[in-house]
Image 1 (spheres, one colour):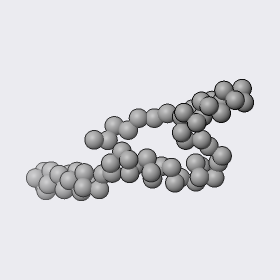
Image 2 (cartoon, one colour):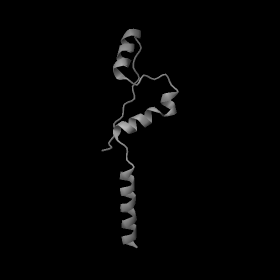
Image 3 (tube, one colour):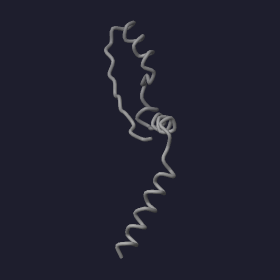
Image 4 (cartoon, helix red, strand yellow):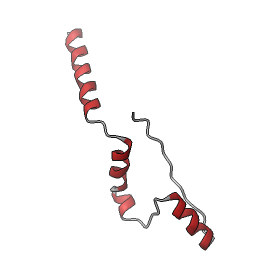
Length: 69
């Protein structure tokens, strides 16, 4: 029983690794999320800095890091 559970766990881990996305693919997928597509967000940091300087409005930033290989 233990051996079959170990084999199953290994198969699940291998399958998960096979469908892992690159950071670029993950970013593209996230940018298609409704909360980003339906909002008037600026996703380019340099552009946001420029607009902030021109309008005097602060920047609200959400930054994250992917630990994917």
